[in-house]
Length: 375
Length: 174
Image (cartoon, chains in turn red, blue):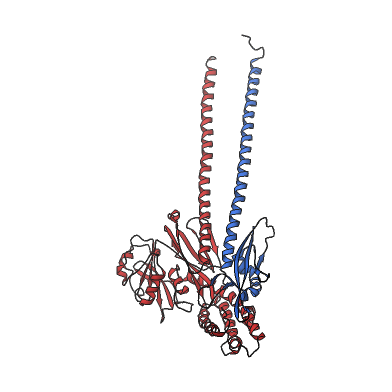
């Protein structure tokens, strides 16, 4: 018995050594494994931050240069879903399911609610009311399909020419739609005869409800908009009251095109509010900070001073358009500033901006003949 | 073979002491290596963080310059036609500083952040027009960018537009 004792102890020690090695090995492996997992998470987050940052830079570049279309290769982002939103005049975009996001309270950004594709299209259009207020940035992707239907030939031709290179198609009837391979579908009903009260076209019925939407132009001059979303086999109207397009019309009307590319009525109006804020500030640049109280300053003040220094009889027409005629720039700019400020609080007032901007446009055209223009 | 004269218990103690010293030495070297690794990683991270900051500052300088060049508050316009690139309207410029100051914190800071933006007339005069000035209290770096522009003054040329020359300077801080 005495001889066997050390052997038994050795066997126990050996077993314990192996158990110890196994536990230590497992702990070390676990440690490295957790580092790998953590690094993977960190690098994915870093990637999403980098993507959002690069997107921000691209959008800044695309947004500032007037009337430019940028087709951006985004094949590296093809697996990610980008989202766009706007709440309280602050738009936000990022990668769905990732924490990285970018917010912007200045630039109006009109885009589908979600977007995925190998090519991002950024189109900047100047918004003028009547002078240039800001550039609208319209964003879409190669996988977002736009079907235009209805309307007169003028708008159809204008839209098709303006959106060369976009994933868009004109259909005379919605039954012609064949959108099997598309990520997202938007129908543009240019005269309000194809969507309201109708069923969702057969080829779109199997689509996810959130992936099919429509924008309908109504009103005498197609100057009001309704936004629709697919709900089963029916169309659900998103806005309670028709959304008025606040613009002076004409070709490539930024406010009208923005509605086509905006996700829904809320994001459209949210981004339009950014433009009205800038309009309020710009009316001070043109008319001075006291323009609302008819105290002329800014560019108009410089013009007024210049013409007064030349003598009242030297340029009666110029001074007349600035301050003497029944409709004059001082009063119109004052009204524009007040209405732009009020419009941010109450949407109905925004409608008055159109007539005021129209007056300023006419007065500016009068100045063009013999005087220095306001803008 | 000479056998140790020490008793069995004492001999085992000495062996254990040697083993313990060995373990301590190994642990010491191990921790020294870890310590060097941490220092190396920290230095590497510090350098790459600084490089990244410089890169971001450079990008911000370019973006701010771009935004300023196309600012509707500044750019020359001709009625309904497209704005004239790289042209500053002097009639707007002269009083713009006042408007920007008024809306600096609640609007323009969002566009320009910490920066100093001014237009320097080079010919025929040499006036300086400061548009925006928001210094960063603890700024460690600054990145200036300059861009040549024409300055359109419609009331200086006696009935004709007068185009002056100058540059737009944008200095961003971080």
